[in-house]
Amino acid sequence: MSFDYGSKRTGIAISDPLKIISSPYKTCKSSSVIDFIKHYINNEKIDVFVVGFPLNLKSKPTDATKIVKIFIQLLKKTFPLIPVKLIDERYTSKIASKAILDAGKNKKYRREKTNIDKISASLILQSYLFNSKV
Image (cartoon, rainbow, N blue to C red; front, side, top):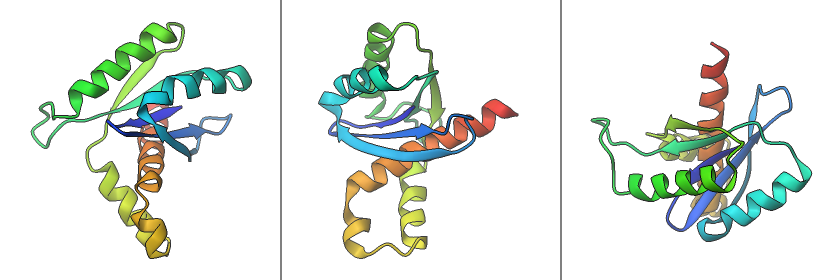
């Protein structure tokens, strides 16, 4: 399960059981993401949490880095048996926006930021899945 964590919304993605393909799952309010995970874990197994880690083009922390670090600490405290992996999330929102446009989605769908968030989470997870197989 991966997260594109933001101050208001968090995009969530999951992988198939074989850990080959990631899929956008949902977007929820960041304030309720821990409750969502608790509910999800009751029905599904999670092997790892993958969190998009915000850095700027010079690999330095951004304004968003602090809130993501707090989220990571909360994940580790709440779910101590599930490892947390960090993936550089630079450009994921731009790539997600382009993917939506390339898919021919209508203007209303493209403007909905929740769609960009969950697709960004899927890109983060796919990057992790690809790099963990190498």
